[in-house]
Length: 141
Image (tube, rainbow, N blue to C red):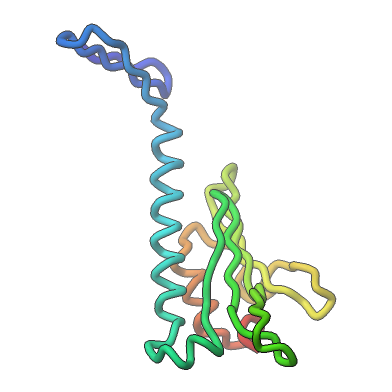
């Protein structure tokens, strides 16, 4: 037997006599998180060099907390090569209420500001393309 009550799906399995609750909105959010992680991983992997020696000097990574992604360069400190730095160059935030992504770049002041050329999209891939093109030198200056 299956019931639909608002956005809550309730499945009753006769064989186990258990009641399972699935929140559809939560399921969609988890799917969004998974898709965002896949796109971010693919994007940073495309930025990475195949040459292991180059990756020791310049590599790329990301962090993701479920609604904010930070893209960063991984490189040794210029005056102390033993110290490895993670230098953030882009921030992407998911706005749940508008179901859209915001693209930020870090200014010389160290503050994050919306990218003046392309700041919002419902499509994460579109913003990642904007980052890779970097036509205005906001990200990989």
